Image 1 (cartoon, rainbow, N blue to C red):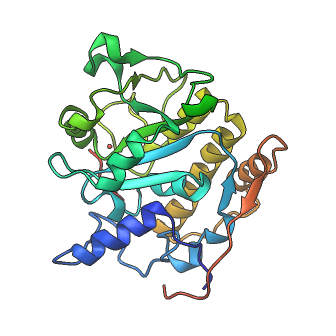
Image 2 (tube, one colour; image 1 turned 60 degrees about the vertical axis):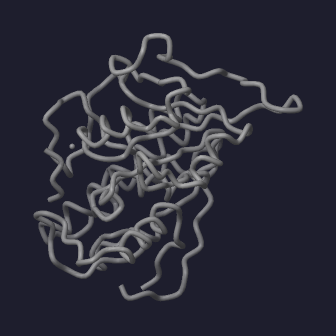
Length: 271
């Protein structure tokens, strides 16, 4: 079966699996073969729908230990669509040197995305610099640092990552409620990682990419739940039509991601 080429999150997942001492089993998840490209069962694979959307902004995912292994993780969806997506496992005492190099690169205008009430007031912002000046008169690109994990894990990452302490904290003010349905959250105002990324893309002016990522989450949710309930995919349904419309936007045209050759195949509990 064809599958999409690996990206930052899939590579992190592979590295995490290689270091595991025992097989990972998603709590409550179905125990069937999964596609390596999209983590869905082969009958509900969505690799053919993956498209790379042009963006001004980039995303850096700091992921809790087993987050890359969870089939319901939506950081994967960001990496599917946003070409400049970086992913690192979180460590308080031994951060990845590549992460530190990325965060110190003058190319980027970095923002830690987190609720403002948990940060010192002087760090909190609600918008990004429209044209942040870089070296040599260049314009910096926004880099949104998302803490990907359960709420308790995200709070730990925020409070115990000294290498993030000098950065502004972008506190979002979403207009609606989360549409994520694959994990249960104890708080109604919590959003999944791809929803947060979509809001950040909007702030960066990447509005077409925001719509595409929102639609992609809808398609992933549909495929996942149909697979879980052993129901067929509604290829001509509303979710797929929204995605087709979104990636056809003339503002930021999406480019299909080449497929590789055949491959065998926030409580925050995966189904």
